[in-house]
Length: 107
Image 1 (spheres, helix red, strand yellow):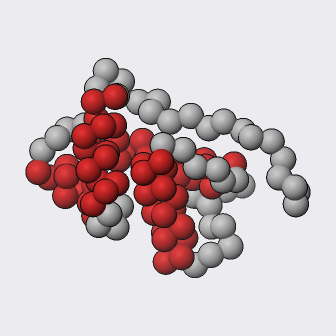
Image 2 (cartoon, rainbow, N blue to C red):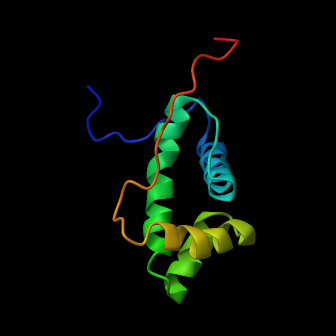
């Protein structure tokens, strides 16, 4: 039994796993959607939910926290602070949805 074990490894070491999740997060914020595998989508969903919650506070500390989490990507941080914050001002959670697109050719 896996007790108190959280997260997926994706057959990567810690640094490359963090880079993968960070790049998926930035891609999602920039384009509004990503096409990836279900386990990766499930792993990145809480990260995005947390960033939107932090960005909704709209103070200097939250802006700095968002910038540090998304690898100093100014375009994504600006989009998160301006557009996403206004879109989800009435929601407390549930900002993202995982929609399955079907099997890939190689599967």
